[in-house]
Length: 341
Image (cartoon, rainbow, N blue to C red; front, side, top):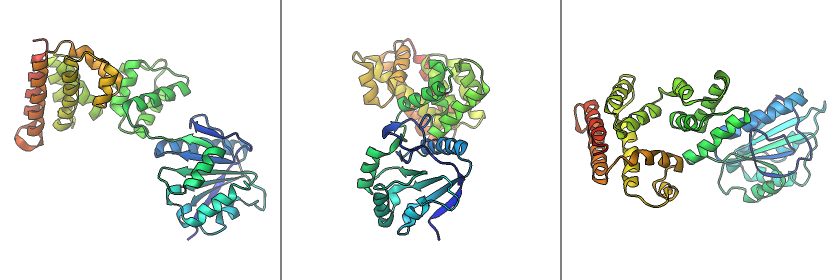
């Protein structure tokens, strides 16, 4: 079976200067390109941009996806050689972590004499396979940053860049709400950003986020936790009952309550740097600063009791009780009733 699959597309610009960590939103096609990092969504966005730019310039471009795990000797050179009609070519060498020794040798040889009118894009999601090739590309190719978003802070940075690239603005509270509601993956978050950019005029507000994404499980559970720890018992109970009636699991709510409870308990008697505490808890600083406003209304023994109430409710929701929905609602009442005492 052939390792390459051909399609039609367009050609890239020649002589691009090497770069480290180009943004996928602004990267320009070049003779050698490296998509570096494990985030598939960013790599896909980068490929879409590169192909669209090439096709705008060269409608006759020949596009090839190259399976480097089964590459035959000389196959890369054949794909990059001038075609009969002189079409520009774009070659995607996928998943360098799986490349065979034949492709590794051919790729290193290709770097000594890069073909004209060819855009060679290599994707490396991680690992040490072919380190010499990766290191060489890092110095000679245009490198596109496809790093994973490891924290909410990374997701907030991604979100801000999405809106800035579109020439749009989003309020800080709205940005935080969007990460909470749609930040389970960059693919989900990117789709949510594009929907708001497309459908909402002017500055994006928290109300806009709530209207489009407030019904998501994560957002609903966090709203219940916020209301409970702020002492708004009626609102917390109403939000919880609505959440359960629309399919949100009580366990998802206890998870949000536990997360909020740990933050409040840690903040009650804390006198040092909030940023340092955020690092030790593994949460973004902005989220802890937001919780600090609520923590001022709590006493340490009440916060400890609230955490215990959540732990009991979580155990009951996971099977220790025949009425898990009521067990969680009871814990919400305990939490809300403990504020300010």
